[in-house]
Length: 213
Length: 213
DNA sequence: GTGTTTTCGCTACGGGTCGTAGCGTAATGC
DNA sequence: GCATTACGCTACGACCCGTAGCGAAAACAC
Image 1 (cartoon, rainbow over the protein chains, first blue to last red):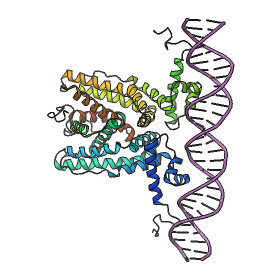
Image 2: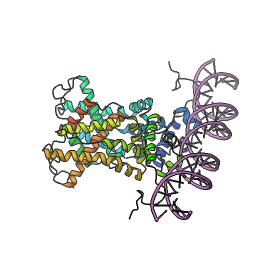
Image 3: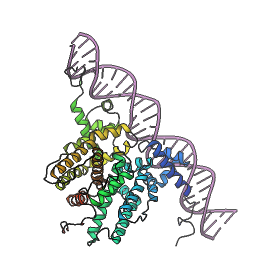
Image 4: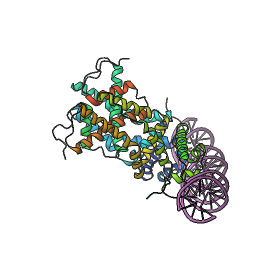
């Protein structure tokens, strides 16, 4: 069906290098200026393209920043560390490392805030950022059930709700720690978080002075 | 030291009614326009005051919205429901009710995003919004320890870290559920969340079909 | 090669918001 | 009365927005 051109139609193709330059320039501008002072004209200058090129590819600032930030989450993986606790800690530390970068901090919450009034934008965020994270939760849960660390779920609907709950708890806690409390989600914090998530508050608060400084 | 005027100095006092009108107009504008399209000129018109009056009292959009949103959290209380689980569910439901309001959704995350590049703004948010929430966690924890539902904390530093962790987990989960997943934190969800928070993931997923629809 | 199609860079523009300055007036305490 | 402060109003330059219009460049079809 498609001809030889990647886009499928004739004519001059869009420059892939320009895309990369624009998204990189957007992240750089997020670091230096933050969300509110970031202007599309400035991004165009940094990327070395015309302002009109930006508007031909993205509807506006919101969509551009979503794509620029989404690339940061490409590096998320689920390494097999042998136990559910170790798997969780590994993923959370990766997530925290991304949120520690200023371009993620300034950009992510801003677009989430905008998405409260823009369903299309929220769907774009869900598809390009959130869904990728949720897959890790799903895979980690399946692996833990195979190991026998978590009870298998009988009802499918109940299972989906549980996955959603876990996802909101994990991602929410890391985001809140990093952006609202403005303190690092370092190994010590992740360790305590994982213990509460797996065993609950009622369990012994600290195993055996493991993290007394 | 202070004279009879509330402000302490002579001259015409600031209109308290204007403050209330401005903050109310800000919330109304947040509902109708959202964060990005909210302008200070528009707020001034809605409040029936001059635009210059706004700039005399607030440094800018960020500080104004923080104060306007902070008033929403005045209603947070910690009713004694008899058990730790019931107390948690009560507070979380209150918090969720506030976050369900559009003026909180659009405003809160936007100022948090701005605060990633503005330390003074973050401190303002911490003092007027976050600290009020954290007190509930502190009070609830003390009450639960008095009841014997939670083990007492020996080390004071360890106790502070635990409170911070719980706070990030509770507030983060509700915020993420409401704003990112964009689904309501209703009673069923809060019930499941409380169970995981208290007993952990390893516990039985559902007590006895309590919430099969 | 000659056409066709699409993208790109550039300039220019009206419209909107920002944050401030200036001025006269209103409301308080001394 | 007098000093002091807050208020309403107008006007202003500066900036950014998003789009239109144009000629040139880069691909394909023939």
